[in-house]
Length: 632
Image (tube, rainbow, N blue to C red):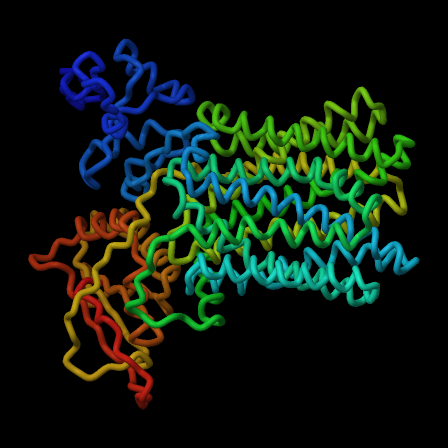
């Protein structure tokens, strides 16, 4: 028997390769024993001589074990009082970055997406060159890029709502087919010589709309394609692939335009969608439960916005991502001008700089696994901000090739480190029912920061010069490091986001339709005076969870005549929204509920009242949903 802080561990439970049959995996033991991270120095000191494996219980929500485990983690000074709030969080051991490529579905879609990314960048070069031939206005040339990125910012929220309410595979397939048709039409119009500046902008805008529709569903589907512990690797591979395409795509696009013209570049982009369409058509994603009617687009967006507002961890991630987008966009936005004016180079120099950035992005992907194993998420983010600030300062202060090349390599590494970690954090910290909307909010924050930053740095460069703009961007990135003090990126633990599934066939005593409501719920607790100091923080967390999942007008009441009686009340707009609210509860939230019930001193469980404030006149198309169970 071994002991770890009072916990007895049988030696037989440890993985023993000697008694393991040949070819049999011992991965099932890894869920019980995980390597002790180096950052837990105090814990390592107390476990000195106990071996490299540290016991972390994965089951059970109560008892002193979770207290002791929680106290091992920095930043948990109040763990003895608030341990139920994070009892379900166990850090994920990152897998190798290239591990997702062993998954056939992901591998096929990944290679197809790289060809599609390459075609997109070739199309961008062809569109910019065609606009330069059709119009002498610099504003019209700049609008080509804006018309492609503007739909992502404007329509991303709607696309996220669609991704959470409809079959994501069909959405992706529809978006790819739509972009294929638009690109083919653009190539045909350019081939017959009927292309005009405004027609080119219209086609480019439509392609951007297809991208805006596709991205949230594609990002939200990664967790359906690969296991949870490979999501970070899959996100990093996607980022690496896009940066690789960005490093060689413009050069290939320029060659195609110079040899065959813009129409051929548009045709190559159209062909690049075929592989992705075939891969998505062959993939069969998980089937969705359609027990409840779909939300309206407005309701879905408002619910997603409420979830974001009531999730402080996601707000911090999106704020840091937007700040990184503003600061890091300076290098990419001004790189052509930097290569031409500051370095007195040609298009070849610009291509060299893009290649260095893309090569650095590949290095960043290969470093992601090791850094995530050794460092906390916040340290990785700070490294991304600081490294990009160093690159921006180097480009501003020393306009030499011997400096620019390594600085762009560093910038590529830090670009992938920061953005892939932001994306992974959002995906692993959000339940499936709202994941598409969470990703759309994240993309809006990131792309909005990049778009606004690109305009800002261009405006500054016109008035003060490129080096000055790079210097100010360096200050913004340094500010991004300092904001980690108040906007710290959390550790995305292995939070069990599985729905509780507490929906039964029990029916109310009165006839209720989907639109019946509002529904009033009140839960009564009996709390001893000595437990009030523990009860109130738990109820504050309970309020956040209730409102996040759809409750309204939450309040906590105390009886004046019986001060030990506390009542929690809230409203849900309709009966179907109440059923949907119960579907959204996850097992990670169960720890708070159990901790509150543990403080309840009544002989019976907490009393629950459910009442309807009024009933709407039922419509013929109203179908009663599954009724909620008797659990609050």
